[in-house]
Image (cartoon, rainbow, N blue to C red):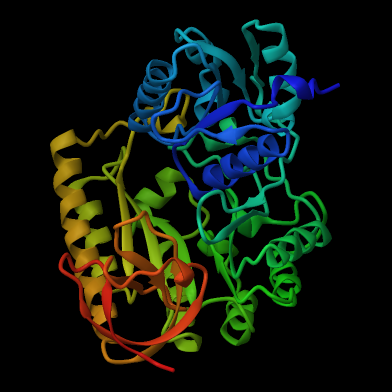
Amino acid sequence: MIATSVFQGKKAAYYTLGCKLNFSETSTFGQMLSELGVQPVQKGERADLCLINTCSVTEVADHKCRQAIHRMVRQHPGAFVVVTGCYAQLKPETVSHIDGVNLVLGSNEKARLVQYLSDAWSQGAKHQFFTQKTKDITTFAPSCSRGNRTRYFLKVQDGCDYFCTYCTIPYARGFSRNPSIASLVAQAGDAAREGGKEIVLTGVNIGDFGKTTGERFVDLVRALDGVEGISRYRISSLEPDLLSDELIDYCAHSRAFMPHFHIPLQSGSDTVLKLMHRHYDRQLFADKIAYVRAVMPDAFIGVDVMVGCRGETPECFEETYDFLSQLDVTQLHVFPYSERPGTSALHIPYVVSDADKRQRSQRLLALSDEKTHAFYRRYVGSVAEVLFERAPRGKSMHGFTRNYIRVELPASEAREEYDNQLMTVRLGDFNHDQTALHIKEWIK
């Protein structure tokens, strides 16, 4: 039984670290609590409740989580502090011993966050709930919300069965699981009725959709494409071995799925890919990119790359650099390898120094800038439809074209009514920091 009286008139502060999936879940938590009378804290106010949704993809992420928890406790003395997410699942004892933390929720428990919070808050006691074994993480916490953003984030899948040697996410999130296509179509319909125009499909390994229900990801895409009112969908990170030609073909001719893919490579060296226990080689990856380009020549293609993992010799890194140099992709998301306790990568003997990791990251980031700028330049002077997103007062407004080119509107020209509006413009040149294109003219 939820003690609704403990929520009435309370103020809450939220802090999210990590991936889009975490942001989606946090905004859903906020929506659930709002329905019980909890309002977001305003600047300068003290919160009665603090909720921190954590990440644990790297040691740096762990450190940032601890910093965020300490900061929230300091900023909101006396608040009831809840910590959930991947770091809470993997290190519950560590989190529970941080001064000021009242409730720790693992991957199973966050699906019943309101109930646990109601019980613990009404009793004024410190509780700890967590799941230690991956096989016991079975619940799916649905999420389709936008929080204070313009785009909606629809959680279509959770967990991962891959167990790559460097990764702890399966231990934090559990095995792959998903809701039904029908339930996701219903959530997308709700978003449309709330005025949403764009939805990003999120998950841990979304191409693995269907493990729970026996359905297929491409069939989910077809069903969502038929939801009236949603003008745009974007697919977040999709493993190359799960990116089927059938899916690429459908997206190329669909009503609302945008020409935009984000595909993790991790390494362009087959030697390193084998050490990582990835499910493909670089030839398969190259073939997928070539096929996307053949049927969707304007597509934005983002690629995840890890540098400095164990076993990545200088020769292996050069293979990766040369491979990516020749690959027709748009942007590289580069991140250094971080040692994670309990992973089998720790048994790989060759260790890359931090200095070499930094140097390799810088080279790939420079390559990424070259590719992104070249892609943007192709569209200077072209006509494009842009969906604008809300901006803080006094700040530049930004939006994205169908193929994810960032477009900037100076603060002096930004209007509140432009938020969540699809508007046709002629693209101008780069902005001052080369991260977006200006608008040359509005097209009536």
